[in-house]
Length: 272
Image (cartoon, rainbow, N blue to C red; front, side, top):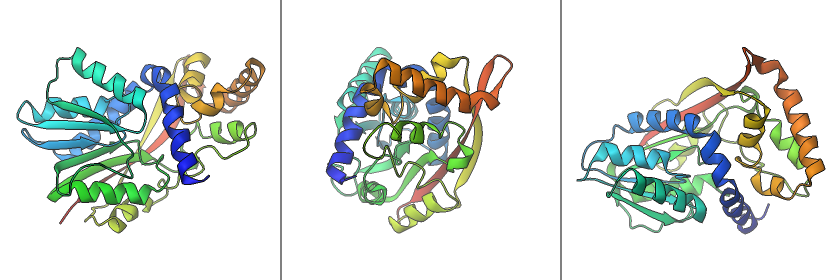
């Protein structure tokens, strides 16, 4: 997919996904955000950038950690994600935050602006992930830290059938590079090429628990990376894709819920 079109698909797709994303993905996002914040070793008073913030879970957690002497800037390509993050920050009474719609590949901040940059489950989506990593490196101060995570290997993520199921009904690839950073060494290698000093990456296997078909399909279709394509499906097509998808999840059903495996890859990077 041509990069300009790719970015448009991501922007409008995530605008459509915001409600279901916020409803179904919070537990996963909270766990991954907490680990990235711990890896980055956030300290009071630091200046933090959260790239691809989504509905702001990591950014809000970071703002609570750095305190009123610090500041967190949250960016995302999708305007509605930024709006939702801003609303949540206001609801919990955080005044040390700023929110901007921004492409991860073109961060509109000067060199050496931040102590820490976070990116939680966001690097699967840029047209050029390495360019986004290079931008993260550029805006960090010397000695600054980055922490990021992505979904792991395709065969370790039990929900991965959503892509071929969706692609069979649309004319172009849906997130063709989604798992590109998932193989062994891919994420840490990308950070090294982006200029970072990188310790070994870490892999975490964790089941995603969906209690019924509504939750499993709500998370993965209207609330996930195929939201734009799914929004154009007819009622009959939606019934078809739900059926195919749930058939693939059937091996994971036990104890009254779907326990779907997921693999996550975490990396930290230091700017010399």
